Image (cartoon, rainbow, N blue to C red):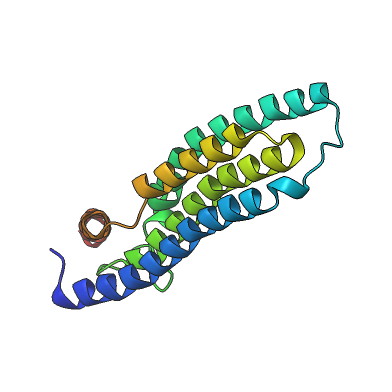
Length: 176
């Protein structure tokens, strides 16, 4: 059961998370604006074959980043062992509420940074190869992924319930 004081902490943490999320999402639009603003002053300095190879590499890296983001996020939230469940100020066998908001914030920031890197790859490819499709496509993929991984109140509450039940169960086992 999530207590009222936990709900208040979640709401405060969620406000900060939403600000971080919005800032990172806005940065994608800044990348788009910068790319389109400097478009006329760009001059290709690399051979087309090198740009094509780099494009393929960055698209593969983007795909891997997209897949890895989900697993890294889950690893941070649910990692193995007691250390992933226990809060910063708790011993492994101390019962009580687990401070989920800092753990959720870490997972959120890491996953948003990973997805934002995909938009950065789009800007780099656009600057090097002057292909608007790279800019639009990779920024769009990044933005959609950020929308998927946006901070969710229900997710934090269910994570709090799950981790507190797990810690409470471990404390019960250790006492008896």
